Image (spheres, rainbow over the protein chains, first blue to last red):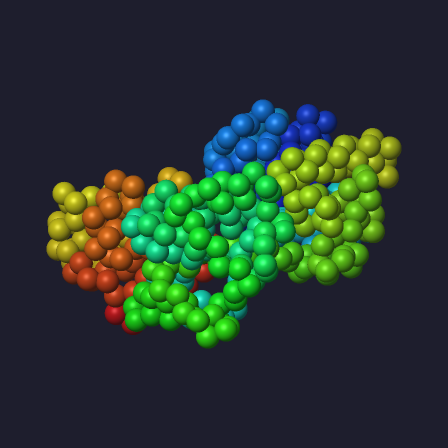
Length: 302
Length: 109
């Protein structure tokens, strides 16, 4: 089996930026893309804080990143998902759902998975009024009343997007105010006449006949809605980290400033790390650093 | 076999009057998971010769049909028999999972 210098697992901004850098260092590189090429940012409504991009759709930005990563002679296994990683002396064997690969170094950049509400009615009404992707489904809610659950940037931007279609958008948040969202988004939702906040509220149950008709809150109150958009953040997937005995904190991979993990030859970048800011720019920066660290180790012969 | 494009002009001919069940992929260009599932759907269309017809319907250009099928979330694959829905698969699924779900539905109908 041919051996890669580096295999990057994940194709969001971290993995793709690592790919751009690794390609330019002329490392023999493979990106294992995972289910969604482009990563979580593909579902972001607008990205307005990536320098040089004043206002770009998340999917458009990710398409540019994918195109860029593909220009430097690296290989890209799209729609392939890494299932197991085994250390074998100084190299690693990676099995995906379709292939098997060998590599000297690994950059883990597979991001997070969406958090679910885990309440009654959530699974039952998936695609029948429950959605995890406002950019995908907003147009089906024209002139309807919808609820967005959550209080971070993704919840607020989902509410803003939905307000372009729906007649009324409730933001349901379990806290008393928005602590985590950027002020610039809060200002926009504050000034949007279709958006109303329901603070200190948690949904207990979602009910309806064939489609979502109402949400029932823990305090017993009810709200009639035609759709519920779940935007309550993401959680790290620990499967691969555990296989390699990588040190984590609440599931997030611990790295040093060179993006090294506690396992020799394994690096991590982007949302899966314990970094303090989960944004495109920080993910991209960490991907770049990880690729540079790999390059230095390889030329040193480590 | 490959996929065919469905619109209001050919719906009756290709779906309602089809001798075999039809699976319709309701999608949109702004839907990242739809775009990712597209190639798998295309590949699967070659594995069900004479058993299942694979069709794609853009929710952007065909809002009326999308509405008739009560589409509220995409990607959404609807399996139809004589134009009537028999089951639907909602959300992204990788190829193998998709195939297993389709087989399960086909066994039942």
